[in-house]
Amino acid sequence: MSKKQHILITGGAGYLGSIMVPTLLDAGYRVTVLDNFMFKQNPLAHVCANPDFDVVRGDARDEALIKGILKDVDVVIPLAALVGAPLCNMDPLGTETINRDAVVMLCQLMSKDQRILMPITNSGYGIGEKGKFCTEETPLRPISLYGTTKVEAEAAVLERGNAISFRLATVFGMAPRFRLDLLVNDFVYRAVHDRAVVLFEADFKRNYIHVRDVTNAFLHGLNNFDAMKDEPYNVGLSDANLSKRELCEKIHEHLPSFVFLEAPIGEDPDKRDYIVSNEKIEATGFKPAFSLDDGIRELIKGYRMIRNSQYGNV
Image (cartoon, rainbow, N blue to C red; front, side, top):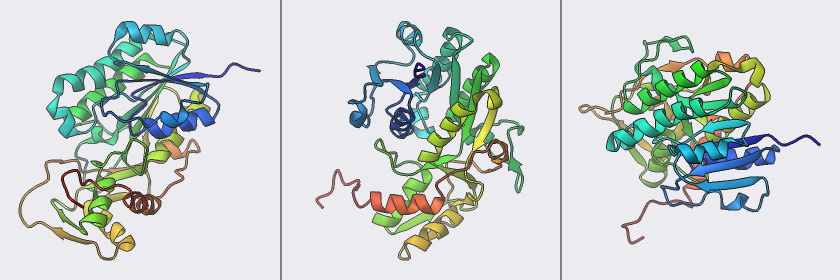
């Protein structure tokens, strides 16, 4: 019987990890999660009974800790990050040291035979050219500290080699560790509970991907590593390069009482505006399993359970 491949996932108790960890365990991998549990949630409680799962409470920047864990690891998936421009702007030093420096340290500590599968973000494309799809050859021009640190981390990983980088579209969908701040998740929440959204700069476009298809992309990379290695890949839904207005129109199909209005004045502090080609990863055989409609239906069900009413009396 062959030895199970051992995967270290830093930040594995976050939004992506809370789906990825149980899926990798089900696929026959050993998984160790390193996380500081900063959000005080326990989204991996249901996998603690699995003998192939282990968890370490600690910091992804702790060199001595990382050295010890790496001794018995075949693959590293560095999910640990401060994610999104608002959080990154609140803690720029933490953003640089976690998002970039911790990944550079991993590259220095890992043996050449150990593999890295790295998530970065479409945010690296910043503001694209109107009507022109961003491919993996498109120059990276991030417009936020978050985007900049992820682009720099990707450069370190690909320069080291024996790695794959996944440039993720804006993620959506339910997960045990949920994120309400992501655009689709946020707009569907407002549609369910507020029944209205005011749009600023409604024509700004971006691409989207279901949280479970992020895990599917990583599984695809693990299964096809030698053919895909040392390259970046966009990961998104090719039929979902949508503006904020088009996204709202899609949500309205599911929730006819939802009203969205375009503000005549004001602007969105988030200036990202791009459309993305996913042809490169599709050419390797990857195909997303979940559509935007699937995600909206799923979120509507989820919001029957979730209501952000900490200070309300209902």
